[in-house]
Amino acid sequence: MDLKVIWNDFIEYLRAETDIHHAYVKWITGIPFLYIDSDLDKSEVEHLIRKWSARAMRGKRLHSDTIFFRTQPSLFVYRHRFYVPQEKMFCCGNLCVDCVRLKN
Image 1 (cartoon, rainbow, N blue to C red):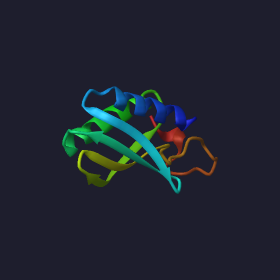
Image 2 (cartoon, rainbow, N blue to C red; image 1 turned 180 degrees about the vertical axis):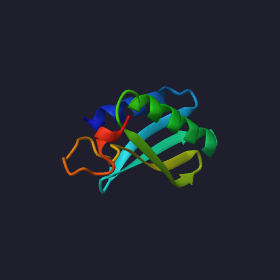
Image 3 (cartoon, one colour; image 1 turned 90 degrees about the vertical axis):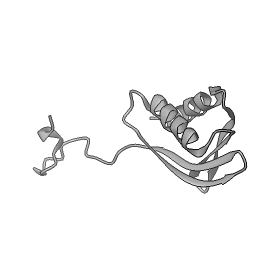
Image 4 (cartoon, rainbow, N blue to C red; image 1 turned 30 degrees about the horizontal axis):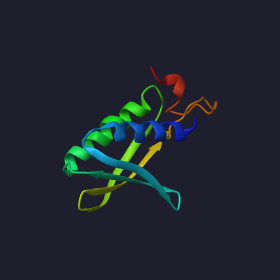
């Protein structure tokens, strides 16, 4: 699965919001930082991040994680990432108690 497509959709959804002036991601040492320029308050910006990341991940086995990093006047910076959950996806044959065959 190519996460670039997910990131592109997510950023485009954020940019389409009328209350967000600019939204972009900057990768620093492999860590994605999300920059959002908006006049909204922090809770409203975080709501939009959750809303549009869920929309971008729809139909895929992904999770997202958003951590507030810093703020400047009308600029919010978050450490945001999309990731695949770490759980077993196949049976290894060792009769594990958390075997995928035992799930509903």
